[in-house]
Image (tube, rainbow, N blue to C red; front, top):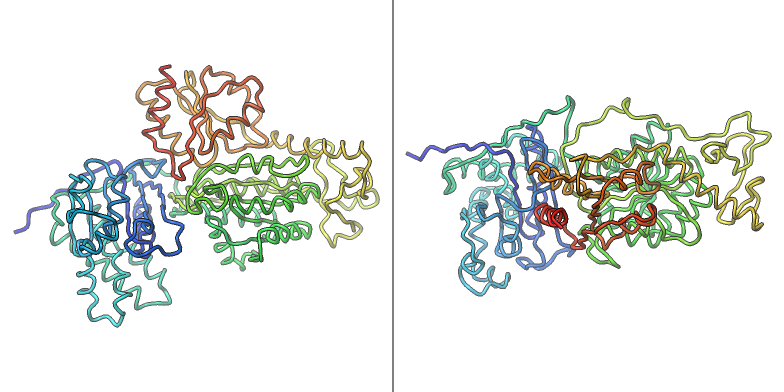
Length: 617
């Protein structure tokens, strides 16, 4: 009789799936994340995949990973290291073992650890575990053989059968954590709705993986559960990544403003998924155009803005370089445009699938002339919805191009998200011309308080006009080279952007309000910085966090908050761009810096060590 399994309850767990780029690790990880989110667990995910279109099978450069942190309560990061590592081949084991905790459980496909497989991964010994010094508990499962046996009566060819291996691993992990695979089955049927044969094959192998664990106990006497204990606001929840949340935020803003949404874009990693998602929603009045290049994408969006749409263009750092001329056209014409920059590793092509915060100074200053532009930075995958909505609201109400910074980490990462009620969101009211202005209106007539010019959409009777890249007269809208007029227009454009500070919230301080050290960050590093500060506060350390979503203009209380603290450290994934920007905006401010440019998220343990050292100095 088999030994009775014991179930251990955990507060949180980190699982990392890894294998060849063609092994479906991203799909397995995504499904496991969704299954976990559906039972009320909080999640944070980190897809980590190579830039190669398809590296040689079994090679070190071709390993794709997906890490998910599942919590009974709130989780803010995908976790520093994993409790369970699924390694589908020797290359995955070799490259991903560094992410394991000493007590981690490792699951391998023993069929993929033959002599040739080891040679491809550059192992020199027959025992890869000895060579790497691995002393962890290892579950050896002949996944490939079981999949072939499971689907021997299937009409699928051998190649298609082997593509199901990821579902066996997923089924085994679901058993290990007492997950209901019915949700995974539903997701597979939806994903392969037009390929029923493939869907059913994957579902069969998924169940075989689950049953293998249940019937053999997979060499372990424990399974685990993570019961949801986080008090959640009532509503409908889903697992969402940052790019999809960004797309939804733009659709919501267009709906709220009563405008059609136009996206002019050119495919670029890691921003392309926004184009893919928006292209699905023609029924909501969304128009998407995949243009011939980055410049055309931005220029077409400017044309859509002139025509009266909510206009958007999406890209990453290299695309911002190319769009900068057109972005400047939006500045001088004062047209509403949302520019989304999903930051990746640079310079040049750099690290296309990795994440950095190195575009900050480029989007603030990377244009000719005095060209002020509001900049917002989303802080998490779910915050991308609110950030996109806010960027659209600012663009439309203040008649300006706005840059929304996200990054590869939060764009591809996902979290549990409550579907919002749009009635809870503020209205969006563009400054349209009114019939009473018809006899006196000129293209750059402005609201006396906000300095925002009024918007006359083409076709509005009595408001025919033209605008363009040459400087215009503040009074008539005609081309003007007058020195005093150019100086005035430069001041007005700057003042208009500066006054946006009246419409954004103050920056908040989280943690110990009487802290000896203030940690400062912006954008997608929020989860890691918050988790590090929270842990330090629980240990009795006097530390706090001020995290910025609004970069230009900064919140009105920025200087007052920063000057309250004797020690400040600005932590960012670049060489100090935000730190230097704050020094410029708050004269005399002395700050320390914590900088990493690795293409990877911060490691919470390293943050705590660095911040503790600063406290003790």
